Image 1: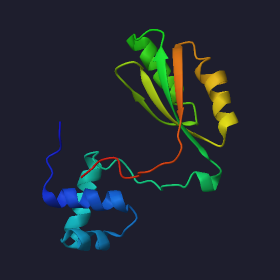
Image 2 (image 1 turned 30 degrees about the vertical axis):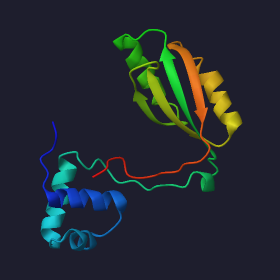
Image 3 (image 1 turned 180 degrees about the vertical axis):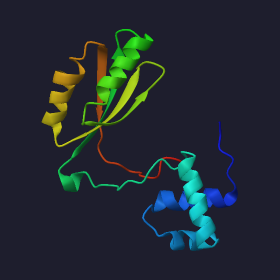
Length: 154
């Protein structure tokens, strides 16, 4: 069910997605309302689960994480039990930063970040393809990220 949001709520979400660290006073100024109602709106958006949390955007290469790759994973069987089992397993893999269950040729798309090619290869060979539910794995190494924006265009 889509949330019922007015234009001020959408402005709040847009501004927080750009900079989640700004003060409530600055946010209120940017969206054109006073601070107390702005804070009430933000809290309501948080309680409704529209704002799921706040995160720091880290620079992977500066921390030694130079490789970003995607894995397209096909399972041997697409039963609910196998899909759930693979989903649970992926939660324990630190290299996998985001994962989606997909339709089409593959069952899962995994966004992987690690230090180098050898670490990624070890993960693919020793962990991913060794998983008893996995039938096929296709990988794509990234060259360069060209766009980085918030998750939702508001």
